[in-house]
Structures are given as C-alpha cells and as structure tokens.
Length: 75
Image (tube, rainbow, N blue to C red; front, top):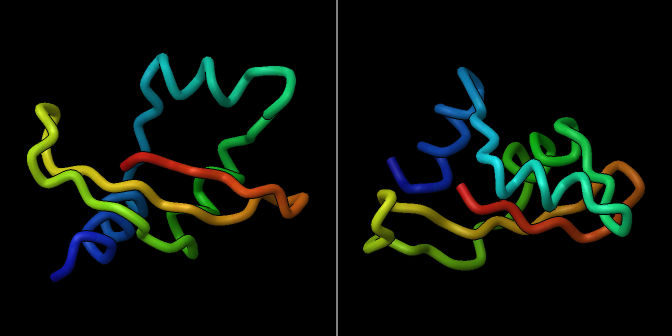
C-alpha cells in the first residue's frame, strides 16, 4: 500500500488536528473547516513525502476547499 492510500484509510477512521493546524485553520484569512481538510485528504494530490520526519513518515497534500481555494494539508 502506498503512502497516500494508507493516509486515506486511516483518515476514514480518525483525523487528529494538532494545535498548530487548528490555529492555521482558524486564521481570519483562511477560515478552513474540518470538511475542507477531509476533502483534501480524500481527493487531494500528494506533492511531497517526508519519510524521515521526526514525528513519523508524513506527506504534504494539496487540494481545494469548498469554495475552491487551494489548501495544503500535512498528514
């Protein structure tokens, strides 16, 4: 199973939002919702992987919010 498939499988069970993510989502200029983030996880594209991340293998996904703004999500 590749990284993106694994992320999507695990996100179908549970998504954890770290404090940094919540702060970034809540910024006035962004106002991103949980639905926006889940949409990126479900249908976005993996643009970079970080296999040596100290928190564990992670990756950067890009997709669109409900109002078609570009959104980046680290998983």
